[in-house]
Image 1 (cartoon, rainbow, N blue to C red):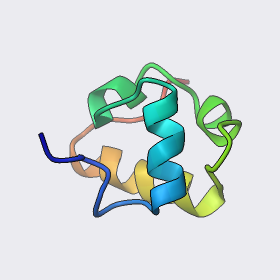
Image 2 (image 1 turned 30 degrees about the vertical axis):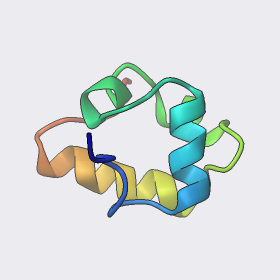
Image 3 (image 1 turned 180 degrees about the vertical axis):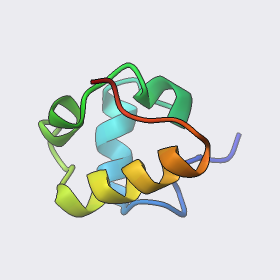
Image 4 (image 1 turned 90 degrees about the horizontal axis):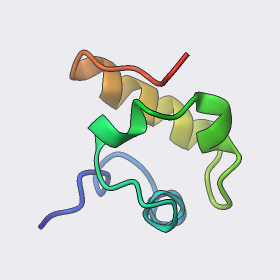
Amino acid sequence: MPNEFEKVIAKPAQRALAGAGIENLEQLTKFTETEIMALHGMGKNGVEKLRIALGEKGLSFAP
């Protein structure tokens, strides 16, 4: 199965999400931006790119 985040964020950020058990954009909607930002390997740029990718699918981070 291809990594949904492969073309969106850098490898360290991909590993951060994988370590948290997050495998797709839909799962991201259960987390706040703050929670995702707290993951080791995730930075502001990665969160911004994820926000854009979520928006393109009509999704968003949890409030």
